[in-house]
Image (cartoon, rainbow, N blue to C red; front, side, top):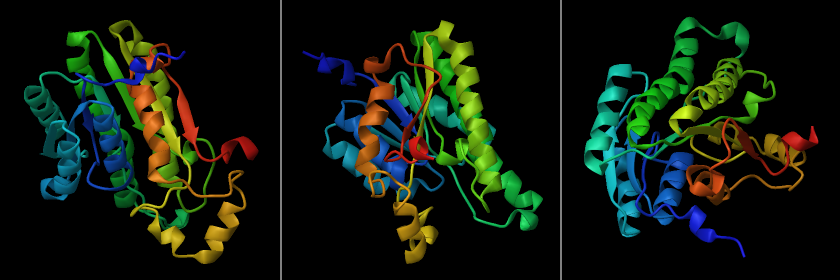
Length: 256
């Protein structure tokens, strides 16, 4: 019989960035349901009220923190705050991200910098700050939110795809470098999930029909579909897994 205690996060602590809504909130709640206390971040601390309440309702501790991941000094400060509040940092979910669809010939430097600074630079320095604490307590697990664009090219999403491809490379490099510290670094590549960030696509019913036809499971992802993957990668169940990116996409990548 499988040892389900391997998935138990009781006594563990986590930091989830971009946790006020969508995927970030779903993953923060998943970790809490598995037993973890969770520090949740977003640019506006007030926007974390519902996430914090949901975590508290599960009997776990919630620590809401205001964080703009494009501010490296603030990343370090907030990671210190999380550690002070929770006692240690065992898990980091690097979820904060942004996207703006624009034809590549119209991409300007400001848009490029905004997307790359949020999705890639911010993720690196959050991982660095968390790892500096993890190494003092025997290690931990970092999970980066990659994308299907980490693997395939999507027109009008070049800055976003570049950031997520870079994030996949970062995941692999950090996993190799930090393994001796007991720190595992993995990634999740969500397929097509309807969130506030992707809502612009779902407003187009023609796009919905065409995209769903490309997904072997013939449906879009639901936020609950990501919960088990996040808990697996954050827990002892994946103790010998590092440097991997698990696509949660209904079979999309496997079929193209």
